[in-house]
Image (cartoon, rainbow, N blue to C red; front, side, top):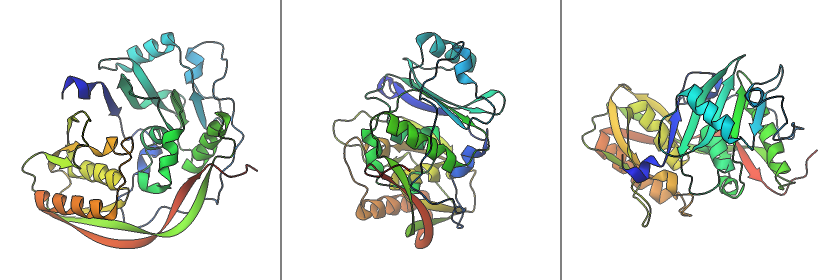
Length: 298
């Protein structure tokens, strides 16, 4: 990994709580959840606890806490306790709370821009991008800081509180609005036979070269799903096969590059050819959450 690429990376530990189960690779759509717009009356984004340590502990019945202004002392304590490596400052930490804190994800490095709602939804909550419509709105909403999530709390409750935090930043009419629609998804099948590093979308001009990721075939499909904003049902015959890929999709939103149907088709054709697998295009009823900045809260 180049020095430039090391400046900003994601450390993710999965299997700590039900949050990780939101990345689904099955034909069956996610269970239904209450209709929206989602509204809530969250606590203030940053409270005034007795000590810095208490800010990273949830009270009984508290589903989520947003620490918008972590101090340098708190960040250094977290870095030591979590044994985080990497150059640069600690950008954001997400913990899962079940009576004690557990690391879900951390970002270390020099951020090129303030952390946004997109990063909170996709990296902190580990929600797949195809869960949302109008996700571009999230790029204009800054939510820097740290997150503590109560284990076992439904994602709709987390979304409700996040909507409240967003409204507190000045987007007074923001909401996640539930919609039912027919959504395109893909079924991946076959036995992967990777040969070289797979380039997941071309690097946009003027951007730094992304580092390579080595993971299982299932992990690759997760990255591919995020890149094309479509669900991918995993029916590969061998998910343990190791694949190395370079994911350039993460810089596409900042470069205002739309994920068109033509771009998706080209990418899947390239992946099928390079990895000896196939993709079947299907449709299914699905629940999505549309980001809107023109709703009235209840």
